[in-house]
Image (tube, rainbow over all chains, first blue to last red; front, top):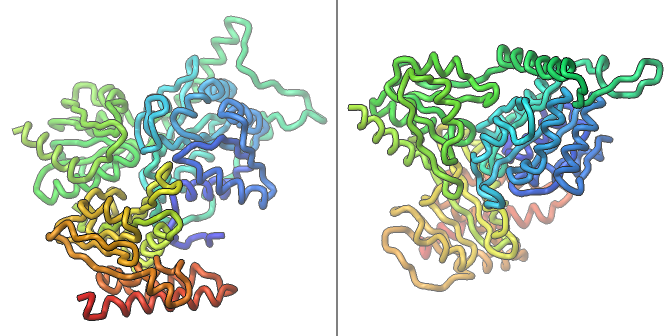
Length: 356
Length: 186
């Protein structure tokens, strides 16, 4: 066992699995898929030793519904999967959202569409943030960019899930899952949240409770969804998270999330050293998206350059946020090869040249 | 750009321990307070074929754990030489397990270092230590990290109950480092 506070070399998938255990995750349900298999592999060994439940489900459809059931008892629980298999979970995700159930889903993106391959990708921004399930719902989504952040945001995912009784996604990719990097594991920093007033934890000695998404009258149905969105408004007010670097006096502002943001940072630093006024705006909460914050930041910029390892997904939210304050351009490539800092630097040079 | 101290690819047959020596190298770098990333090849190519991992060591945060043109390649088998020889950065080095590779050099703009790691390991009495011989030779040759760091890392990894195994690995470190100091290697 790793001592708390010690800097160790950790694989992204192992780091988040260890963090989940520290966060008090009592139940894990999942079905194997590369590039996130180390999560299940690790938990399958550790959870039984701790008297917790690890269950390899017969399918992703089963896993997400098991998560729904376990989390409905107020128990901290999670699943993890990747892209094409997260696609199979969409029905259950919609139910978890509608039922106000606190559940954590780890999504380690790989290349698509469809089977694609195991290479890292950011092709599931839409799948996660816009949702693939039916109806009006939102999924709180956090996007780490280092192994350390895999720990930080796994903790935060469990915290926010229980604080708002909502589904929270940790959106990583194959690069972050597979790579090792020095990181510090520390104790779960959030207070425990009392679930006793709603959880389906046995009705002995109290009236029964009901959790469900069916509402047979017009009024009840409308009230249910309005209440859900009142909650989403609170999340928007309190939980937007982003990071900026050299943004204040930048003429060119780069937007990037997750693993691409860390690569872009190096290119931005080099551009600054070369005297170019370039900055970075990195959304960390992808929903709620830092719309107002990016709008403010984009004011007076000559161009906002959105960079993603896909053919252009977050760029739509960037455009909504920038809302005409600046020109928005996109630079992306589909999964397969990886952005190098040099490649992004070259694009920065080209874009700056175009501004003259 | 982050001034990279080194980008290194460790490559060999699955089972030769290339991921392990990549991790050992990464731990050495971390213990010397450098920034480091380790990234394995993962998926189908691990099953029965060659395995490799990329280690990036730098003085500031590592941007990307990937490297198409590494400074160094440590090749433990012939397939790895064939796969990576042309990718080494000009001026970089290819460290070859010469027990398993006897072909001609295909480039003139990189350095070749030959270490008969299987023979050295066999003499110690444990052929499985060929990976540690290679790593030790590489560290001694390049001084990217200290040999002393490697000794510490190996002592941490091998539990005290396996004293014999630790002894063999320490011998592998010594012999690998000694080999690259020989005139034949310089």
